[in-house]
Length: 353
Ligand SMILES: NC(=O)c1ccc[n+]([C@@H]2O[C@H](COP(=O)([O-])OP(=O)(O)OC[C@H]3O[C@@H](n4cnc5c(N)ncnc54)[C@H](O)[C@@H]3O)[C@@H](O)[C@H]2O)c1
Ligand SMILES: [Zn+2]
Image (cartoon, rainbow, N blue to C red; front, top):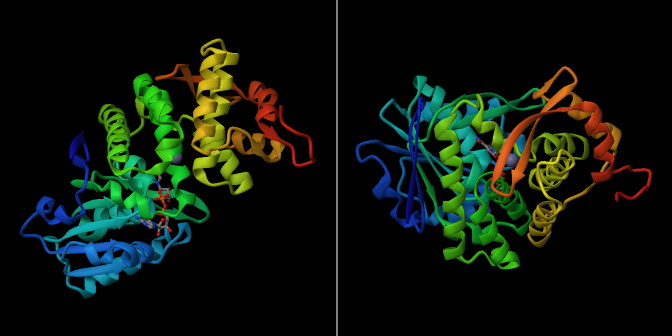
């Protein structure tokens, strides 16, 4: 087992990576009644191995349930079960369960102790680490939320094996992102593994998740509330979000295209070699992730213009100075308008380069 730590203003988080599910009780506080929040699929697949709890609260599944209504339902279940401030709330599931559990734990009785058992690859390497909680509101993602560190995060690599294959891409996109922005040796390790990474060998996954958690924890430890360094974690996400909004592509696929685009932009700016761009594209391809998208370029550019990170006619973009090193640069929208059509094919049938 490998242990990582984040010490933030919002508290300390210990992240344990290894075969930890059966041992969960050992890491939870002794005198706190345990309340579990989970989703229906996770309860069906892994419920028989959950630690013993006072109450298990299932919340359905899917992005559509990441709402204040679900928060309300969980709070009423807690109230009905007479949960007081001594409780420990444990979210067992993917990013959706973690985000809801963290938000409820931050606000119920003005805050109770909480932790996660992250059961998707995305939750293990990303959503459960870093202390952002929240729900969607009026069509906006993660519009209402808090910064609050889960006391404990358990990542068991065996959970990855029962995930639907379509869920893996989201996790692997963030994994490649971590390597690309912060750790050239990790990137080479992923290249060496290549398609074997998709075999999901628990030992290999434990090493990968641990390395990614270490990178995210380090970045968040330096900049918990995203004033600077943490922005690097947005690598691939500026174009990625615009693609997600305009095409409904999966987050991981959109981010993958976004990373390939940001690498090409880095090369265009003279920061990155062409061979490094090709290495990134190859690795994404091997992991079954796309590097170009079939979407309407004009709509994507318009969505980019509405990005939170836009200031006047420039957008803050995360670029690469090399594999393993990121830099945030201001990019004129005009340059994006010229380059995006090479990555995004127009729906009128023209093919991207
Ligand atoms: N807080 C953050 O910093 C942060 C970061 C990244 C993403 N997120 C959020 O995370 C969410 C996405 O998370 P996700 O990709 O984990 O999606 P998810 O929670 O919907 O899980 C994906 C699917 O896998 C199922 N599942 C989960 N674990 C399983 C297992 N072990 N075996 C079988 N099925 C399993 C779930 O029921 C669900 O259908 C988004 O809402 C996103 O905004 C938050
Ligand atoms: Zn992401």
